[in-house]
Image 1 (cartoon, one colour):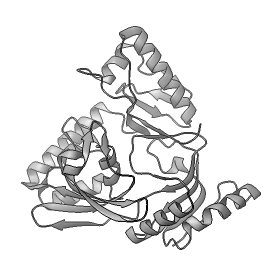
Image 2 (image 1 turned 180 degrees about the vertical axis):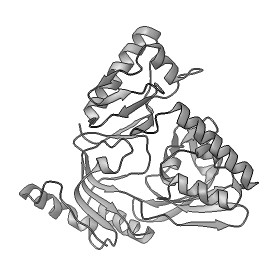
Image 3 (image 1 turned 90 degrees about the vertical axis):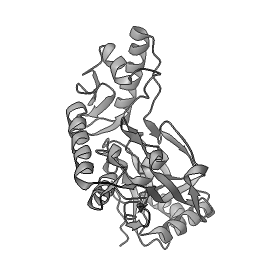
Image 4 (image 1 turned 60 degrees about the horizontal axis):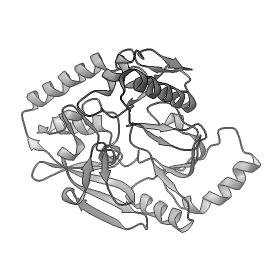
Length: 314
């Protein structure tokens, strides 16, 4: 059912904005929210408003939305990955959540097809019930399957590229194209895909023993709980690991554990995590990142590169 809301009530500015964006969202059967606060949709619980946030009802809705957005010459951005910081003035144009695209089906040869909005915990649970191994590396990752493909999400146990067989993309003109894994260049925390929206992924898994799969998942979840700040909002690892080193180690070596700017704080449990202790803004996080980088260079000589993805207006 379509849903429209305004964070601060209807104003002349919101009315003009809605009039401009309305043709792009006309006929959408999913949820539509104007001036939607994105802090409600990010794992950091930080982010300014989207001009309009859309949750398409299904792939056909995605196709309609993409075509209409393209016709109106409006930009769009897709939510999905957890490794994201939305700046305080939010995102212009159309922001898309694939939360309603959550179908999973099993195909022959130990293959699972998952729509782009399926959460990784849900997908892992589905695989375990069918004794399918190959996704254990993703235990504890809260993002969607589409987000994990786009970011080539990974842990010390493996990466998304290890299981992807093919990806279904709605291209910017609304055409649907399937890309086999061999046509996708996977890199560290990045997949080279054509412009568009990942609406489905085929995953090549393998038959295993359910008890063994469950044990690996439980053990890794325990490890993550012991070593990462999972009880506070964060966006996962902030910096990429330097060559032959750990970003967490160098940040800790620079004496930065527990350092904060506003409510943004370097985790005392894992120094490559910045946590939101309550009301952190994107500006707080960015100021803390600047402080970390400067002190790490000063004390260790290492120049840290962001793994965190920055979007929106400051």
